[in-house]
Image 1: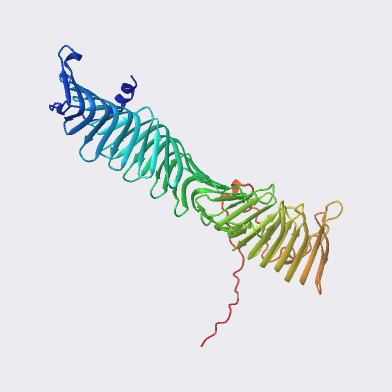
Image 2: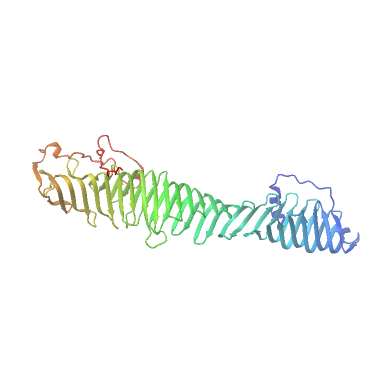
Length: 526
């Protein structure tokens, strides 16, 4: 009953039409023969070095019962079938039907085809379709590869095999591949898995629901529900290609790479990763999330994100993220926009290039280059080089402003500005608040250097050597001393949420920084 249940679906899936052969089973040799028409329905009872042949197949056994009328026989003891010089089938018991050309071998079965060996306790071999299939557990040995399953079939013409239920592949280079359905090509060494599957290699694991694995080249192609786990990392994508030898993994669509050790996540619709060097790249809606600095997560987006890992095999490992172009970043206490950026987990510094802008609370910082230093919970300090300007919004009309060649801003643990240093061609516009928060006058200061100290989120005092200061009643100051040259409030550009980092908004015409002409080192001419 078991044989029939499994044999019919396997045979019927082939389109080749089964036709009876005209050749008859031939007795080649037997030490003893007994025949009686009244016994065993006219069967011939054979014993001692029995040899039978049929349609290019030769069978050896200790004893057999041959039924001439039905062209079938049963063989017992050291049964061996030889077909050509590539196929041998061994077992303890055999039933063979000459009309259907199906051999049913039982107990201690071994099928040898070229370099492949199949071990099982029950195997049916269909000579017409060139298929051997088992249904009570079996093992296929292909060189140094071992495949086990509850059910399987092997095609001698194509040298391909299919396995179902509790399938496991073990290779010298792979701990195991476990699945429920596998198609395996013994020539190319490609294994296709369908359904919930896991690939184990050392401490690494890959999960997929449809994919291909090559035991010779150690390459993987995965297409559904794929996740890769290893070395404190998790990577997933709709389509994943992986090469174990080079350590390179490529992923397409809905890609994410999670580094739990360094506490960052890289996502996008295309990602490239080298597990040997720790280098990664993401494009097509690329997003990096860093949550290593405390409770607040830093979200960074750019057209392309590249991440480099240093000291990867040591305790002092750190990462550097490069983002270009149209870079935008968001954290609750800080937002930023630039053409490109670099972020280091070692120095906890974000460097912004080309028309960068940084916002903190109601303050905006612009310059040619901005370096923001982060601590565990907020911004520690901001350094701005060349064409630096800090703007603090008081209301919709009034803005405190500081412009200089260089600027340093320091924050306390609450994210509040404690000191602002300005160096070189310093200009200051300040609107002091009265106790009732009204504005009655404004200050304008020009100096070479200034230090401004804040207290309770208000300007407490200013220190400046050899300064020129002016005092104006509110509304009576000249326009160029109310709004400094280069003043612009970029609230329409500012990222307002993690999702908003994907929405690039450029500066309005006339508000970009002036081109900076920098001196170059003189070249020695011989």
